[in-house]
Length: 187
Image: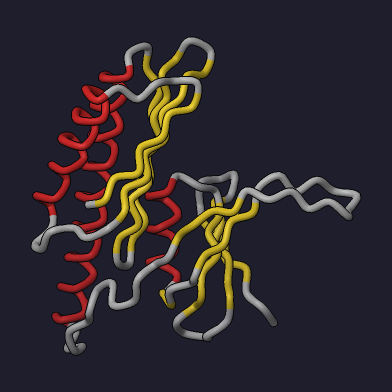
């Protein structure tokens, strides 16, 4: 893993850096092969709380967690617990989905065959009546609706834009106020 650890309004000491790297490296035990990915860690202070945000783009999955505590070391421990829960939840769903497809006579599926690329551009659009303060760009991995909902839940978002593997179009799943899910597709 390649670590990119940043501090905003906070000095990232060598001890804090080593503790963070050691804890995040332990997530590798959940995977068969060593993780060769970039780990983006952002630490900052907000209203006397120590906040840590961790983003780990993996093949076919984007792990992201954020935690706020009075102590940065406690925040690191909490964010690692969240990431472990996300990984276990994802692996359980993938294994269940795989067993269902195999039991129905489908051929084996390659989970996560296409990588998900993730990066941010902080840009401000100037010649507009609306101020765009952040712009995010993604390479869409083709996936079905169930996988998109799972990805949305793991990210903790209320909506998720994806390339529908069935129709080939860009679609959006979203969480409704009643707790159920909606799907927006092009006509």
